[in-house]
Every structure is written in C-alpha cells, then in structure tokens.
Image: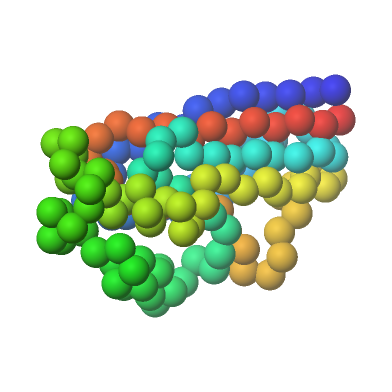
Length: 139
C-alpha cells in the first residue's frame, strides 16, 4: 500500500476566511502515486474546518452570514470560554457546525467528486499560522 502525509499551512488575513484548497489536494494525490484509495483532509486546529461544497462566492457569503448569526463573534462576553482570556468562543462553535475533516475517494488517480464539489479550508479565528493534514492511502 502507498501512503503520503503532508501538511498545508495557512495564515489568513481576516478572522474568518474560506480558502479553496482543491488544487493543492489534487497535487498531493498526484504526488502520492495512489491510483485507488482514500484522501483524508483535516484541520489540525480547533477553530478551523475543512468541508466540501460548491465554489460559488454567494454561497460562501451565505455560509459566513449564517455562521455569524448562529455564533456571533460579539459580544465576546457572551461566551464562557472567553473568560479564560480568549476571544474565540464563537470560532469553536463554528468549527463544530462545519466539521473537522473530509474523506474523498481516489479513483484512477483522481479525487472522485460529485458535480461542483470542491474542498475548502474555513478559518474562524485567523491571522495566525495554522495547518491542515492531508493523508492519502491506497494502491
């Protein structure tokens, strides 16, 4: 069995950002040499997510608005977590909603997506360096 483990690093300029990482993940699948297997992509920080959806700017803005309504950043005093000196209680909740990871099948050396599917890194407490793990296994 072949395998590859790589880390992608991000430092987004805003508190909340959404980064399409599909091409980077596809490049790692090619690098791995795996023709048929699985690709795991997961955020290695508790205030960031990896998810799959459409690469459409309006949808990304809808996600951002929806998440901010569900778990608004302010007032920061609203979150008990922030009593520890942090100001990112909302980011932890947003991550729970959007999830930690995705697993995509690899078929004939390509990510086996449905129509319009893309892999995104979502950052909810940005402006510092964070990483995403990509683990590829198969034959």
